[in-house]
Length: 150
Image (cartoon, rainbow, N blue to C red):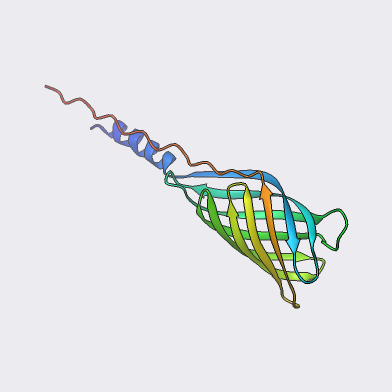
């Protein structure tokens, strides 16, 4: 193989090794706990890398706002995520009307669940739906062998 063919094959393989994307999303959670129960809407963005086999790592920033009757208040969360493109574990930190908190859960394809643990005491759980879908990148095409002279 000549150097140009090797370089082109390396670029194709490197480009298909993983995809980095940033996507926005919206969602709705049902929250529950000793101090709150009700609906909250959220809006956010996630930046992630996903490999052709579905391995995914990323970070997510989301603003959560309670609406309708009930004591659900606003908060902001920054989390890291890792897993597969259709289900990832998430851990992070947030701040809301009840102070700072740690957050953790599972972020699936169009669903999420988890909980927030407030540093000053108290907790809140949630279960919800969202619009984000993470697609696997297309696998790299197999390199075409160079014909042998002869």
